[in-house]
Length: 293
Image 1 (cartoon, rainbow, N blue to C red):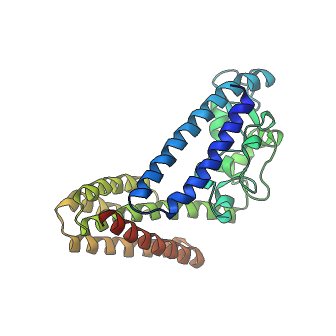
Image 2: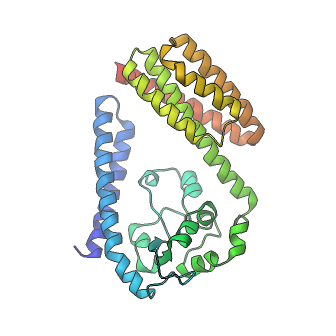
Image 3: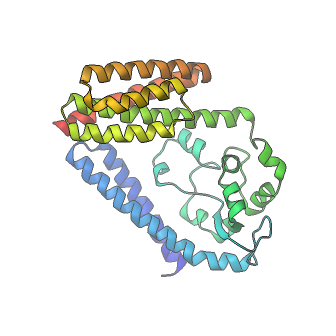
């Protein structure tokens, strides 16, 4: 199949995914589970088409770039890099979220993302640097790099990777956003486990307790040691606790996290965190009631 046909297929898949994602968010109960399975199936196809596209395009870009890294001229461990990345999760995301996670203005079209003009060859080391936090920051905001030549120039400047490439205020805001998002995910799975326990679904309670352990490990850099140790002790004994004890521990953990976040987040970001948490809790209660019903 020609490259242009693969790109068109990828475009059709993204359009279909965006439509099904809207349907999924409106569904409840059994229909929601079916819609979710359809999204997973589409994402697998999307990833397979992307892999095939990379396989077809890499030899062409390698030949064009002289089988060398565009930055350091290395000839080993060469990889194909794209100036603009993609994510199915952002197809229907609000503009504010796209601005935080994407690299230059609106979400790029498939033809822009897979244009040979926006692809180039990097060695493994330079590619890792390109995908690092600072490298990604260069693909964000008003001063984002929009051409391969600009990206190569930035990657070749050692001074750039000693300091944040965008204003420190924006870099710190991005870090805080990632931090609060990880904590939100941790609190979400913890609340889900306790809510399922309250509704008598022991199987799902155990499943989400397992997820809580995983998310707690992901938050190890965001949370103080006191909260981490308390949570580890709680998770060891969670299956032997009743609902009242579980809710009491959750309340204490939330209070400790709120105190911690008040000290590191500006007041507007902390209020936004509380707002998102409240919306998250309401949605969890509604979904669990629907599943249990």
